[in-house]
Amino acid sequence: MKVLVAYLSQTGNTRKVAEAIYDAIEADKELKPLGEVESLEGFDLAFIGFPIHAANPASDAKAFLEEKARGRKVAVFITHSNPEDGENVARYLENCRASLVDVDLVGMFNCQGEMAEAIMEFLSKSENPRHRQFAEYAPQTKGQPDESRLEKARAFAREVMEKVC
Image 1 (cartoon, rainbow, N blue to C red):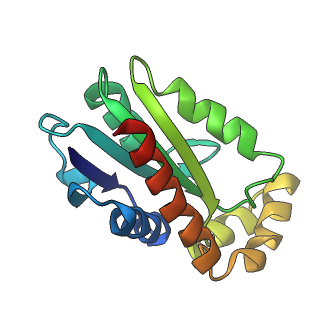
Image 2: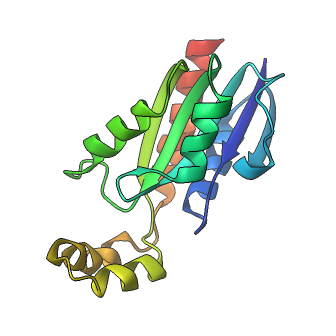
C-alpha cells in the first residue's frame, strides 16, 4: 500500500499534525506540501490536511479536494483555533464534508492549532463584536497543537490504516 500525507500549512500547525500522522504510518509513504501534489495517482490512500479559514476549508485545499480527490480513498485532517468541542467545530466539519464530492472518506480528524498573530490582529480590529471576542480567545490557543493533540493525530493515522488495510 502506498500512502500520501499532504498538507496545506501557513503557520506550521497543520504541518505538525501531518508529520505526526506520517510518523505513525507503517507503509510505503510520502509527505508533501499540498501545493507540490499534482495528482493522487499511484497512491492507495491520501491523508489531506488543511486549516479552516472563516469556517471553511482553506480555498486551495477545497479546490484540491474538489478537483483531484474524486474517486480516491481519503482521510482528512484539519486544524482550527477552537477547542475540538467548541460550538463552531461541527459547522467546520460539515463544511469540509461538503467539499468531499465523490470521495471515499475513510476518516476525519480535527484539532486546535495556535491562532496566527495576523489573524488575531485582524479580528481584534473588526467592526464585528463577535470577531473581536474571538480575537480575545487567541492567547488560549498558544502552543497548539500540543503533544497530546499530536498523539491523537498519530492514533487517528493508525486507526485509518487498520481500517483500510
